[in-house]
Length: 147
Image (cartoon, rainbow, N blue to C red; front, side, top):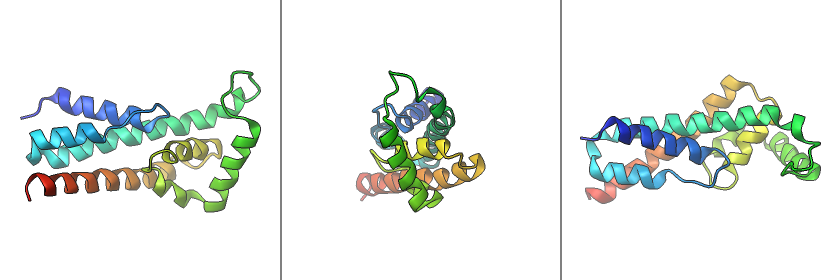
């Protein structure tokens, strides 16, 4: 039986992985699933909640981003920001369903904040994407553990 620290660690790992930090949580989920396959729903829940929370942090950072844009240390050029905004506006809020993807998912959630996507809609679309990803990963893991 997994301890509450395992679930907390998975949620924190998933939260940090959803921010702009270069981390991943999939290995933690797969490892915990191999130790306790019967906890699949609980593990997917904690991973998803942590990952959505990390995306919400990105959204909030996006809402604050433009106030720092004139600073010398700001990591994004105005041209890069404009290009990202144009891409988001072109594909719309539905692009948030791709927020589970590596490399492009985290910036998508940040740009959604910059463009003031409503928080409730942002959370709904990102939740669908994140729960879907962890559910598919869990199903694949269980399939290969217990063929």
